[in-house]
Amino acid sequence: MSERGKLIVVSGPSGAGKSTVVFKVMEQRKDLCFSTSVTTRSPRPGEVDGREYFFIDPERFQQMVEQDELLEHATYVSHSYGTPRQFVEDKLNAGINVVLDIEVQGARQVSEKMPEAVKIFFAPPSLDELERRLTSRGTETPEAVRGRLARARQEYAEADFYDYLIVNDDVEHAAAELSAIITAEHCRFHDRAEILRDRR
Ligand code: ADP
Ligand code: 5GP
Image (cartoon, rainbow, N blue to C red; front, side, top):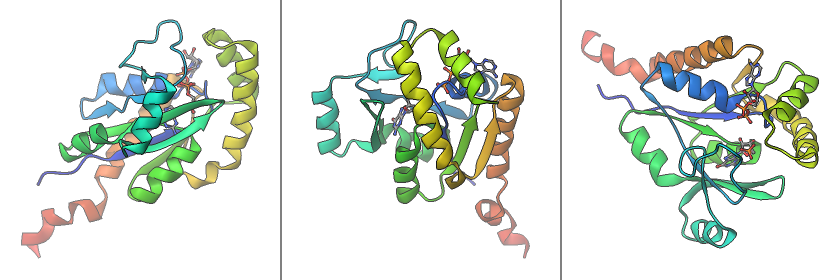
């Protein structure tokens, strides 16, 4: 039986540690891939075009929206972000699980189109720790840090839309929880009922 991949939507405040944890799990399991989004924001030091994001200009972004090339898209702290549709569909069809690291508006759009998506909210242990992580990452101006902290409060207000909550206190522990969720989702009876078909 060839199983379709799971679509895993990961959201939570910028700086919660989503990419750190997702990339840690990808080192451990080969059935998982990351959907690289397009964005109109500038690369941070160390970010590579095509790895963290495809960095594109607002004109190209608008063109992708008009040509329906994006599964979802949203504005976050004055920049546009979107998920290229084709990559996600190809991987799911090939049985690979796909992680989308997207904010809440995008998660809602994905959930409308693909209700089977698994939605996981990442929280830092506290807002003070979030501020410390955002500051120590050293990639944001103080103004951008303030914008992200303000946005974090809005995101918490919508967090009960998600299926799972991971508190990223410790990277290893959070990675183990993310991996366990993916494994459990593949054990759902509905997905595996075919296995018992000839035995009943
Ligand atoms: P996000 O993808 O949610 O924006 P990042 O993965 O970039 O967040 O993490 C933000 C910062 O916090 C990075 O400097 C990262 O190294 C650090 N970080 C991530 N997880 C933890 C953790 N459990 N404990 C301490 N620092 C962490
Ligand atoms: P950052 O600029 O810190 O990398 O990301 C800012 C926010 O944008 C994060 O909450 C991240 O999850 C979200 N984001 C990244 N890519 C996408 C995307 O393709 N679509 C949506 N809706 N949000 C995204």
